[in-house]
Length: 152
Image (cartoon, rainbow, N blue to C red; front, top):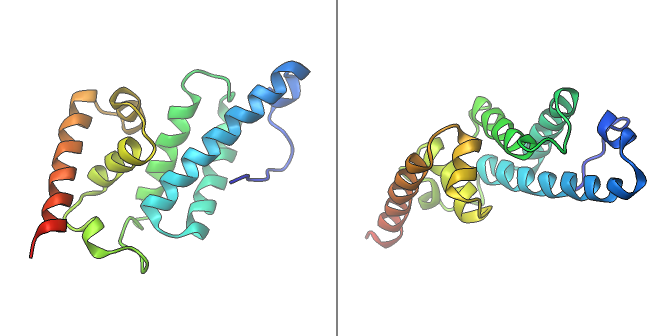
């Protein structure tokens, strides 16, 4: 996924030519992760693109992409924006059991850890909880999914 924005951020404009490729690669990676998260939560690409446009435009106005916490902040903002839209519901192409009994928090934890393969520490930073909470929530969410998959 490659979003187009009006103009470049000041970080991109000020980057020496040798660092520009690394900067662009970092942004592309963040866009891919953020888009995956938004699509998994919203189940609709159009809404996911709208969320990313909003989050990345707001993110670039306040932080540089090379800031160490920028990636976690972007994913956190994507998560919060998706939840604000109250669209974290099963979509028409999504089997009902995937969301059956899962809270938004459990679903987000599953997406971050199991789909995006973030560590417990990274997922905890994105959601704003402790890694122990991530571990507990992930276990509960997996139990719920397994129960839904194998119930009669």
